[in-house]
Length: 415
Image (cartoon, rainbow, N blue to C red; front, top):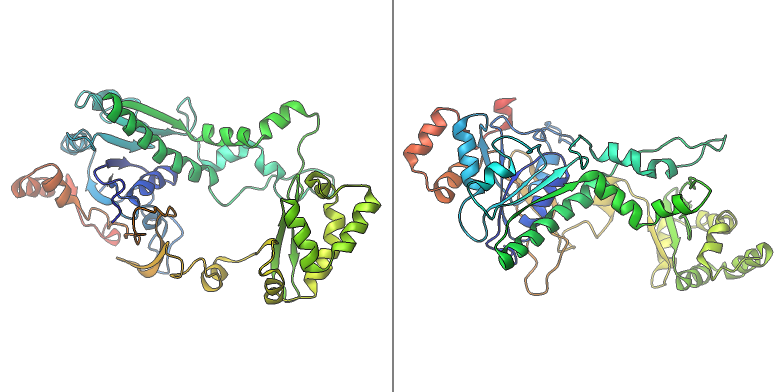
């Protein structure tokens, strides 16, 4: 197990993508992350994708390496257990991560701070004012769906939503970063704090970081969709002779030179450049000529199979990649296999054995560690109550008998 975050313990109350991902990011680096859920399972316990037996693959994917406490937090006893767990003494304790509403009530920062002055609480909101938002509603507002896909025949654009919850993913990493930064501040100053983060702020910050907001302010024209062309540079998709799709991208002059040499199209590219009066050493000019450049490239790709294209580009500076389905990804791509130290075959209870990624960060001071499986709901209930909170077997028995805690819990049993 990683030692780099050894001694750091985070209590997590979460659902959806960002907050569980934030906790798992820390867990995969050695932090002790304890998530608590209702005895019947949380909001994500059955979320798709699922296997052929309707077991969620989503939940174990975002909760690897954590400990699980199944508890009824509607009961006063359950609430007190969670408060004690969050505010437990110790330098690495007193850290709470959640994306649930906590402005008021027993789980609020002010109430928890009464039990531990240096509490660190990191709370993910939808919008800064506390109103609800998820990745897909935030993305609608960023403008990206309006420049995704192809314009219709009237020059208008029908918005195209993304499938990847990109803002959730970025928020998850920022949540982990926020916890580490706040914990460092506490070690140096002794001060805890409430750290708030809004999913919409994550999205709008990145939109601004990439220049889209400034472009809208400073240019008269609205950004248009350009299909699969790479805006401001050159990139396009092509079909190989055996019906596979590839994407070729040029973002440096060396890539442009290498593409001409590898395909034998250098002279044709030069003729296009001369005819259009452009300078293809300028990536903006390459973008302007995207349609013209793509004609000979499309013809070239159509003459070769995917394997032959791969051979032609091997050892060159050409930047390219094949389009792959998820099935093709796991059967054809060596980067998604046990040949990549990030991946391991893992046995997940109630599901079976499958390929699972660990942390993508490879620390030089530590051997790369294999991923740890996700817990069964409530798998660590007794351990947490006895070891972490010091409860006796009799006390735990009373809590179980009264329905305050449970576990391990098979989800089929509470469906």
